[in-house]
Image 1: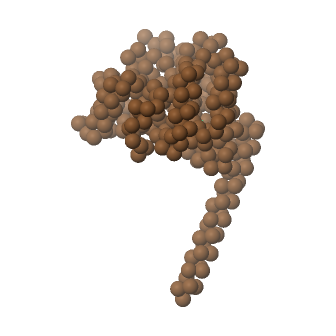
Image 2: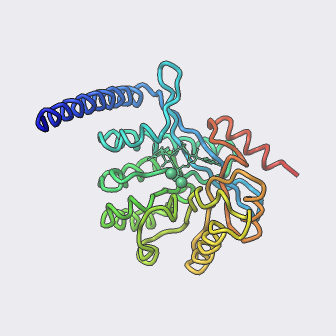
Image 3: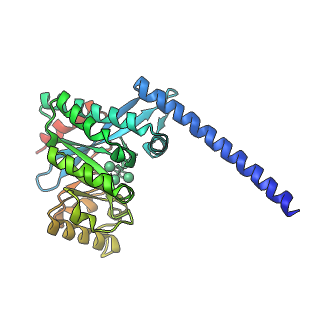
Length: 281
Ligand code: C2E
Ligand code: MG
Ligand code: MG
Ligand code: MG
């Protein structure tokens, strides 16, 4: 009887696995086509300098609108791209797009730095840095206008290749940020050894900030203190309310990003949003 139950369970399990892998395969195939056919688009979300009240940076966030009109979240397709190796052609496409955007921005007097998210596989791939260098050259981009966001989990899993990449990025002049800071189960000692410029405080810590003397406020204050003494810039992610914004200003946080200012938008929409923001009283 036990054996019968086990056999059944295994059957059910392998059915589930098959369905799952078929879905994954379909997603992989359509992502491959999406990259080839240009179904992907770069959206930009502004990052505000809180002291100057100016838009000084933005983050490139990939958007994929499927042929049937539906948007597929990067939380869904980035992991598939990672697992299948498609992240390499995807990542190269993104680097190229962002450098093209920076070239256009120079002509339009849109003076912002653009951040790209770089994943673990890209960090371990020796060609990534060459691709960045060649795109920067092709589109005559000032490397200081480009930044790279790495999560702490990328640091943990590929420390050796990260540190090699960061040295090269530093030589180039590309800015390096730690994304989702505080959520990665990593030791803080990397802050001592790696060439990092900036911490992006994860939105989970920003949510309840400033409401009372709560844990989130304490954590954000501690991160601000740490960053100050290590000479790192801080960007607060996921700012949605005026109270959060005020708390960050009161505590000398450098920059903020979130729906309070704007959601990620198309490059054209970003350009005009940037100009409107700059002309605000
Ligand atoms: P991330 O790099 O931490 O990006 C910030 C995410 O927070 C974005 O989600 C953004 O839309 C969202 N966000 C911004 N402000 C707010 C806010 O005020 N409230 C809330 N609730 N959310 C806010 P998105 O675009 O869905 O991207 C999710 C994640 O997918 C990114 O997290 C990043 O890890 C990854 N991702 C997106 N685009 C790319 C890409 O081009 N390459 C790579 N490797 N990863 C990407
Ligand atoms: Mg990011
Ligand atoms: Mg983040
Ligand atoms: Mg994230």
